[in-house]
Structure formats: C-alpha cells, structure tokens
Length: 294
Image 1 (cartoon, rainbow, N blue to C red):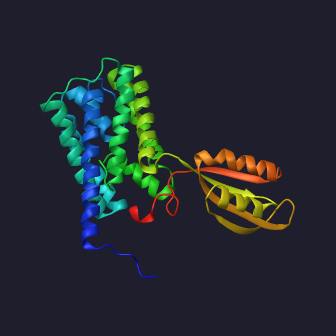
Image 2 (image 1 turned 90 degrees about the horizontal axis):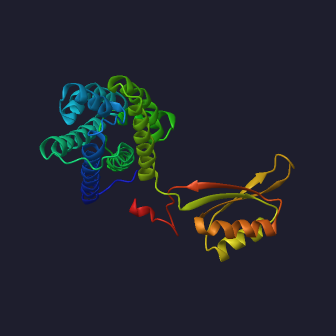
Image 3 (image 1 turned 120 degrees about the vertical axis):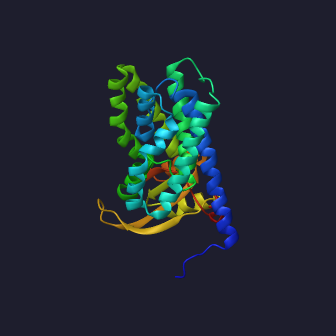
C-alpha cells in the first residue's frame, strides 16, 4: 500500500500548529514556575527540579540552569528518539527556559498566592497543561520529559506515569537540601497533578465507552444499538471457553450518556450476557470525531 503523503501546504499548516502548541504550552509552563513553583521552592522533579534546588543554593536563573543541565539529556534523546526530536527538544527547552527567566527574573511577576498548598495545586495544573501542549506539538522541554517519552515509546507506560517514576527520587532529595520535610510532600502534589493533567491533555477526556458484549441474543442487541442508539459496531465469531459453543461478540462504541440505556436493555434481554466496558479517550470516524481532522 502506498504511504499517505501530505502536500506542502498541509505540512506547513501542521508545522505552524505544532509551533503554536509549543509556544502556548511553554508560556503556560513559565507562568506556573514564576507564579507558584519557584517562589515556594516547589520541586516538580527532573532537570527543572534540580534547577530550582540550584537556584535556592546559588541564586542562578532557573531557565539558564535548565539549559545547561539539559546537554546530556539532549545526547540521550538523540540516541533514542532521533535527530528530529533533538531539534524539537531544543525548541521547546529554549523557549520555555527563556520565558521562565523573562517572567521570574526580568518582569519579576509576584507570587500567585501566599499559600504553599494552593501554589502546589495550581503550579501542578499549569505545569501539566503546558507540558501536555508542548508534547502535542511533538516537542519536549528536555529533562525527565525525554525520559518519560522514551519509557512511553518502549514500555507502553503513559507519559505521565513515566515522568512520575523518573521524578520521584529528585523530589525526595529536595527535603534534604531544604531541610524541610514538607518540601517533598508539596513536590509530590505538584508531580501527581501535573502527571494527570499531561495525560488528560494528550489522551483527552473520556466521553465514550467501548462495550464488548457476549450474548445469546446478539441480533436483538445489535438491532437496539443500530436503531435505538444510532450507533454501529462489529460482530465477530467467537467460541465460549466455559460452554464450548459457537456464538458472536458485539463490539461497539457509544457515548457515555447512552451506557445506562444499553445496560438496561441487555439486562432485560439477556440476563446471562457477559459485558465488558472500557473508557475510550479518542474515537475517529462516523458519528464521532472525523478522521481527516486529526
């Protein structure tokens, strides 16, 4: 099959869209650092976390430290993710680092709150939102982001969980440096919130449900799905391991609000049916998001 190639205008449009993601995401991240994380010495992990620790010890600009510490990480990203990713990492890291120092060192934005708990919550939200947008722009800001993307690529772990595992040790070490047990506790809040927000930005909010149905009444259930719920699906031949008999499995995707209606019909039609329900974060095709829009 001949691979699909994009026209030059489509390539330019995609590049512009990615750059917009990187710019907006970097600005949001920088605000999170300037308003909440740096003023309260909240360590989110990774190179940026180390940079905040060094900023506390030596009063050097956080953005400049991030750039300096990312050199070995860039070499690692070249080895595992390729030349293209090094270039996008340089873009994401450079823009976000410059904006951090612009907001914190030059403009000197005031802290967003006087409450460290609120700072950890909102700092985590802005950090996760910014990183998620940068990732959607097919770029990175370096540090543990690259490690997270490598783990995501080779292990199947989500990007958010991969970053969480990578950053745990760095956050724990902040308590020793600041000689404050609460410092890593707030850092864990930042890490948890930012990781969840990253996954939400990348994978989307679950508005759809994947339903797999094994039943002796597949024709009636299929008719209900098609004519009542106005959904489609697939019917696959199957064999019950327990009963050792042939049958069919229905696989369909429905909107979340339709789930209760479908479950009620299945319960009434075939109380012995076997149903598996999973969250679906993105559905492309008729009745959902058009595939050409991705």
